[in-house]
Image 1 (cartoon, protein in one colour):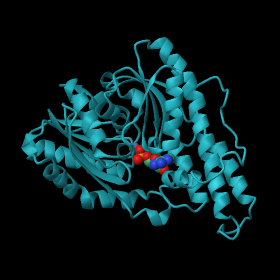
Image 2 (cartoon, protein in one colour):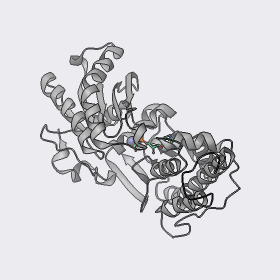
Image 3 (cartoon, helix red, strand yellow):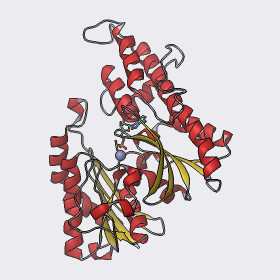
Image 4 (spheres, protein in one colour):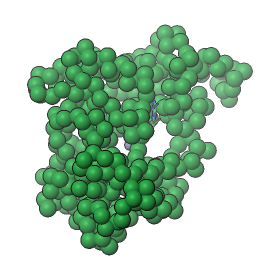
Length: 357
Ligand code: KG4
Ligand code: ZN
C-alpha cells in the first residue's frame, strides 16, 4: 500500500510518500523563510506561500519516489488543527488529486501525524505513552491505536514550543526559537538562575509555562528596560538564561511525565514505550532526560529522527496510511478544522470527517 501525505498547517509546505512496508519513498519539505523578519508565523503570508509552492512540492514527492500518481492507494492531508488558510491549501490539493485519480482522500489530524510517526521509524507498538510537544500543543496522552487516545494532561496556557519561541524572542535570538535556545543553552550555566515550576505538585497532569516565561522576562528586565543588546546583556548571560530556562521547562515536562508513567504502567500493563513527538522533541537535552526517565521506569524510550520531529509530510502520509488500513476514508465535503482535539479523533466521534469505508 502506498500513500501520499500533504502537510501545510503552519510554516512548512511538505509532501511525502510512504508504504505499508515502512519505507519512506520520498520526503520533501520547504520551510518558509518569509516569517523570520516578523519573529513568528504570519498566517496570511504562510497561506500564500503554501499556495505558491504546493503543486511543485507534490510533484517533487512523486519524482523522488520514482512512482506515478496513479500508483498511490490514497491521498492524505493534514486537515487541522492549524492556521486555517494553510490547511485549506493542502486539503484542496489533496481533494483535487483524489478526484482526478479516483483514489480515496484521508483527512489526518496534524497531531495524529506527530503521534504516530514513531511507529514508522521506531516500530513502536500500541499502547504507548506519548509526550506531544510542539509549537501549538503540549499534551500527555496514551495512544491506544490510530484514532484512539486517552488524554492525561495538557497545558493550560502556552505550548512548550511557544514558550521556547517567546523566550528566544525576548532574547532576540530569532525564530523559530527552540533550536537557538538549545544551541545557547549548551554553553550556559543551567544552575545560575532559579526559575519557577508552574503547576508542580498540582495533583493532576496539566502543565503551564506562562509563569516560567514571566520569570525569564523579569531576569532580562533586570539588565535594563530599553533595547537589549550585547552591551547590556552579554552573550554569556544570554547562554545562562537559555540553559536555566531549558532545564526548568524540561523539568516541568518530566515531573508530569513521571506521574503519567506510573499511571500508564498500572492501567496499560502490556505497554512498553514512552514516545516523544512534535517540534520540541528535536531537543537533544530533553531527549536525554526522557531516555533516563524511561529506563528508570522500565520502559523503552522512542523518538522519531530529529528531521521528522518538526512538521513534515511523512508523518501525515503514515497516519493517513494507518487510518486507511483501518478502513477510514473521508468525503470530499470534509471541512478543514482549525481546532481539532486529538482525543476527539476517534472515528465514531469525528462526525462527517470519519466515515467507515
Ligand atoms: O511540530 P512543529 O514543527 O510545529 C507545530 O506543529 O507547532 O513544532 C515547532 C516548534 C517551535 O515552537 C520550535 O521552536 C520548536 O518546535 N522546536 C524546538 C526545537 N526545534 C524545534 N524546541 C526546542 N528545542 C529544539 N531543538
Ligand atoms: Zn506540528
